[in-house]
Image (cartoon, rainbow, N blue to C red):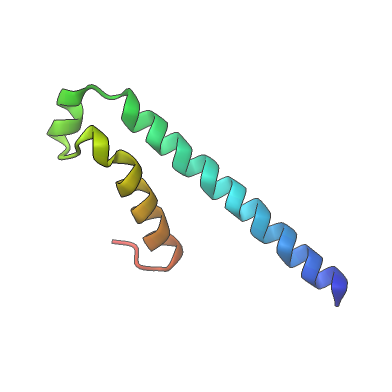
Amino acid sequence: MKRTIMETMLMRFVRYVLDWRKTRSIIRDLNRLSDRELRDIGIDRSEIDHLVYTLAQEEQRGKKK
């Protein structure tokens, strides 16, 4: 039983790290865009972190739009 718990904890940690890396990559890519490009897609630079983290949380909870 202990082994199963440890494996589950390890898998959750690995999933967390992978999700975090994906999220940071998206934020980095969006920050590389110019202000004009961001305006074209309807995003203000100050909203990037909030939008990406909100969408990531919704995706994890199964509320993917």
